[in-house]
Image (cartoon, rainbow, N blue to C red):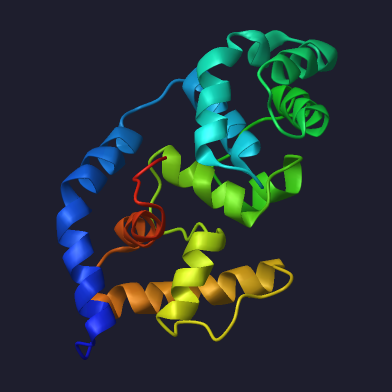
Length: 196
């Protein structure tokens, strides 16, 4: 890839945050039991259309109720934790209790309420799978900035998601930062943080 000021700045940022990113990715790759896997799924349901920080705060305090509570109990707990969209999210989590988890992106999108391709990709990455793009607003803005895509799409269907993911993979290869790291590099460059 031709060195431009932007790509140089990105690679400098990458060098700076790489140790933290390596540690985080290593965390994700640790074996997880069924309970921990379900917690990650709930985290991704909670993080959708809000923030990882809020989702982490709620998950740190929600307790066992996500595993065995009924919808009303989950809703009341989420409400007490000032969780955004607590009604819908309680419904999504309650529905998820009764659904088998498979580590396939299409299956997750088709079978879990509140899970689109971004959330499915986020979940799979967080349990140690590699090579998925988590196309949130920070990543999409970065991809426009680096001219990987010309504009942020208004809607994001499966075809469009995969098309942008493919472009991000090509950019990843050109710049020499693998996909899982690139997600964190672009995200932390925009937010100043390396979160889950």
